[in-house]
Length: 141
Ligand SMILES: [Zn+2]
Image (cartoon, rainbow, N blue to C red):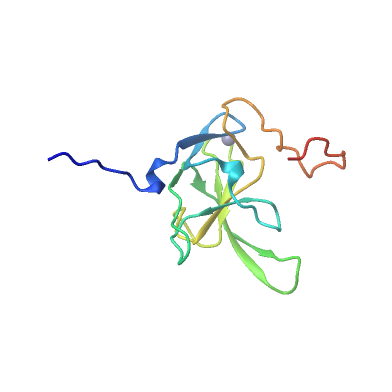
């Protein structure tokens, strides 16, 4: 008997590798980072790391070491957010964070800092310095 196995939609997405700006491999993820939704506060990319009622979790593997957690006061009000940063193993730059202790993926969402990773090893992404100057954005997509 011949059976045709159709993979579920989640496993068909291409896995992509991302690198820290120093060139170290830091993330493999299903799909493209720049297609992910972004936080309104800091424009970090939102990786859904736990399945919700409406959406499945996204497959990813973060190759970064946990840094020192800290409390961040939110701009809008009295609320604090616990931040557990994850650092590149080589240059110790923060590449991602979540709001619960390690390991990565133990929180509903993992946030990847905008401009902290690039898909092409050794190349700085065009958004690396976004927000650090007042230059006009000529080619905002
Ligand atoms: Zn690095």
